[in-house]
Image 1 (cartoon, rainbow, N blue to C red):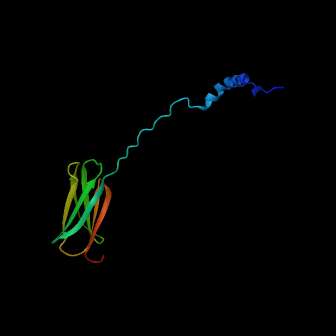
Image 2: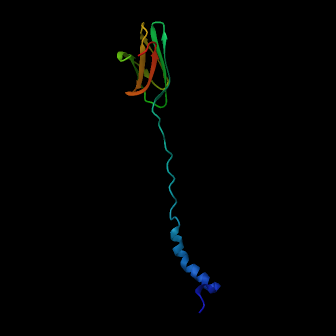
Length: 130
């Protein structure tokens, strides 16, 4: 007895009969291309310096990133004692802020910078040990 695949005509017939079942392994649709991920970084303080200018402390800060216009706030501390608060309104055109605090005596000063209720940075100036 001869096998089914022994003649070329029968092999071709077998291939033609099995061809429709082989197409089930292929994609019947084009896969969707995912949308690009859009990342929005929060506002961040890229530059912040705290230094003494005579009897005053000078804090300079720059905010980068996308943000809605709002107030950049600073809370001043000498050690654990709170000295005061200040804020400056920032928008896209105004990203730099300068704060001054009268502090004639040396101390362990800290300035906590926040924007929209979120603390962004703390800068320190230790003139004496805390």
